[in-house]
Length: 187
Image (cartoon, rainbow, N blue to C red; front, side, top):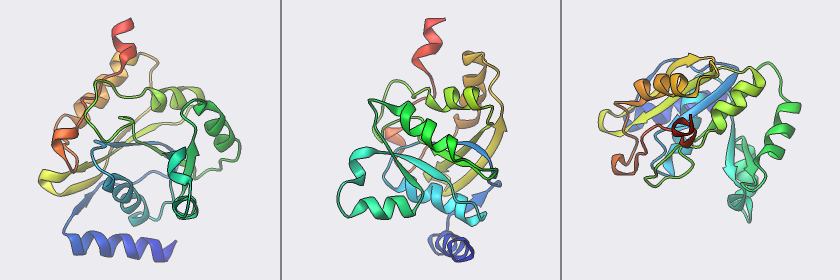
């Protein structure tokens, strides 16, 4: 892990990105805004710079071919979007005290209408806290924000998320999806 930590810190220094906050050892890490393929590398740099190896849910199709072993080595876990619960249950069964799951809650790098609720559901079902990681291209800042334990009140929990991400734009600000869940309007 020492080599990964040094690599991440060197990469951030060379690219002149500012790193803020500290990465928790356990929980659900929301990576947002998810506007580019570089977000995966950014979240690894954030975690590795703190000496943490996160696990990352990645669309199953990315694991086909030569990219599969590389993604697995980087902590990638194939996610079958038709049966996401299977991958998550298997992953949590083998989790230890340093379990950190990174999720791109927007679910796509393109501008969308809603975030995916999986990060809140997993946190509520497991009792794991939610930590908010971010990339902000305009300020060349990335890192970690606050951590919270979901209350079960989706609107109140998402208000916390919205307040944190209000000024975060991602690598490609035009692709940013406002933090809101379809479930919020279904009261």
